[in-house]
Length: 571
Image (cartoon, rainbow, N blue to C red; front, top):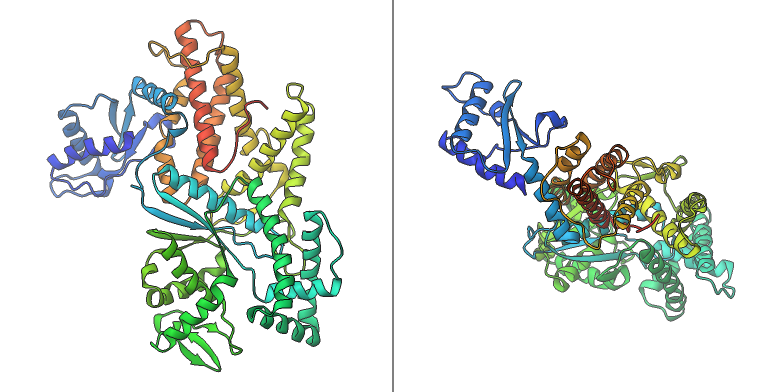
């Protein structure tokens, strides 16, 4: 990575001037006329014997030049009040293109993680409820981050903690009993039935004292493992898990371990009771609480008045189980923003209850996903179910593909699914995790906008050019031609990819790669329209432009892989 080498070389000049390099940072200027890298270190530092930042910048640059300009640099200049701008040589940038073509799918990878273990816990759908657009965000984000960290050299474990016991399940089972189970073959029919049963149970719980009592009794029986209740619970739970499995396959994600509330409920209760004797917890009005107030947090109930473990108690056992089963340095919980205060208390309690998890847990929050009707909620049956959403997007994709004469029926079907899933995932990942999203179907499939279909189309366009060139491997130009502006723009974008992958991973921000890919695709399409590739003036020029095309295709493919999105070879 040029940035690392540049920092190393620049530090030599600073050392000679007896300036600490801890404040030395480089960034890519928004305006390409200001160079490939820029640093404002002269504006951030003060030296008694140097009156202005410009004078300091001048001294730094002169010292840097005096040591001998590194062979990868074309020039270095001072602009404005003391910004130091740096340009890389075109030949060096083309060498990076060669690296892309040689490394292929490994371009952008690094050994940064040194095989350290990291766990991403995401998805978290509750059984007996539908998988909605909110789950789509945590699943897309969690899977993407897992891929980023694998690429950065970490040992990554994907886990999924699912609520398969508790009041929501009792409400659903009450509804199931009231509606009556009829013979159902299709999984889709079974899930729709569970959705209706949950809605019925939830409404009844709020409106009827009799129903509330019956549902609470079902909940108690489930925790007590009463045979009849468990039988119905197990049957309907299997429906949910089969439904989730299909969704994970469609979304290109998988898990190393599924955890369930039912397996950590009793161990969680035992952990709390054991630590009650140690003074970690205390009794309060018949319940057992963690006194968060003495830690500057809030108190939370861990065991209810009727002796049932809460989510909090279960999370104690979950952490103990996770850290005993996997050797990890960090566990990232990809969970919504409403859980911020909850996790603060949980992490504080874990310091005392499960010390091996102390300071290794992180809550990665994300913003709500909204349609025009508001926040997703399954409370009253008004959620946006994932398969419905995918079907709506696919309808629009199929309309576009219908006019395509270059694909047969089988190809169209495969491309439609690939583009549909890509469109939905990208529409979520292109925003920073904390931002709220207004999901727009039309925008998600805009073939000319900031969308996965646009990137997938650009990739397919590159592949079409390479197929027409008729070469199994991309020939490389003997020398770099006089660069056109569009070619220069591509060269000055491609080399940034490895650094960006690292930055996006370390900041848990896949949106940075989305922004980069969209910018790269726009620059390639401008190049494609402005410059002839296959009919270039010379063989060297043609080979140079084919190499650019192959490098762009590879980076788009690699980048979309990090987002959990596949690319079609034809579109």
